[in-house]
Length: 388
Figure 1: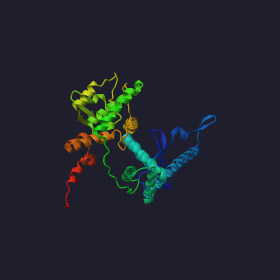
Figure 2: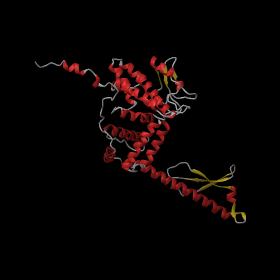
Figure 3: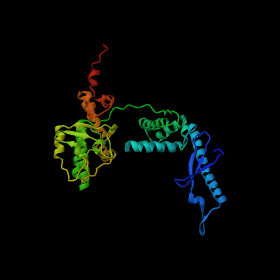
Figure 4: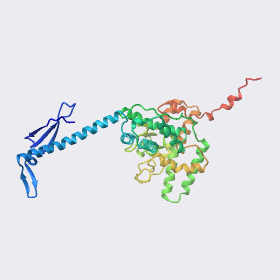
């Protein structure tokens, strides 16, 4: 790679010999330090330093030059290979995915990082560490079959395949590969699974019963936190993650406002902070709720520590109770939010106000919570009389 042209100069200011290396296609030489003046003039022996002869100095300098020349040559060859590899098959998928995941971990939420990490692990489990440019329809099919074998329905498979599509879009933007289109199952739109008013009353009563039955202070506090979360969500349609990360200082009972603001380790969905009103009944509950000194979170362990690190923990805590009460197909906490939104829509509330309360970016999302099974269709079909 380097041209057979060698040049060394002595830098009097720094007292070092400097080598200049010329690569094909490069107008400017690469400069590297070869040795200091002392290393050039003296050699180390068993009896200490000894002055080099002129021939030894020249030989030593030539060896230093050759050594660094080899390093530069090897690096240039590697860079050329890497460039050619990226232009054809690209880098190994594991390496590229790790760069992607590192970026996600740095700039996205922990929940997003965990979801993408699971998708990446599924991908590598079935497809191995192929080069990124090798992805094809057979790979797509194999990945979909793996997700099916894991018992996922069409919507779950679509979700993880969408994460892989997100990865490939990122990879294309960063010049790791050409555009890749991931085939995904068609989305199955389900009716929202909600609780009736009676269901919510039954759940609250059951939560109070298990709270009363708790045999120690820790369990009693955990059950009371679940009651707190339940009452707050039923009255506000807040998300479970928002409830878990709600600081007490962000609740203004006097003004009847709740500020959904970011904390040091959490940010609201979509990065959008918000302030929502609270009802008079909710304000009364919050005002009467006894707190221990040092508590900082709405759901607190009693010493300023968050009771739940994420909404998953809160959901796990009540899933068994849900099952015991016979509620199937309804997510423990998201079902409450869906229920509030659905009941408001069914009662004729203006959808734009419901959208604002739920903080949906798209009004179509709010419309999706309207459970058509609850609409008075029976009265309408009874009025169909087209035949005599």
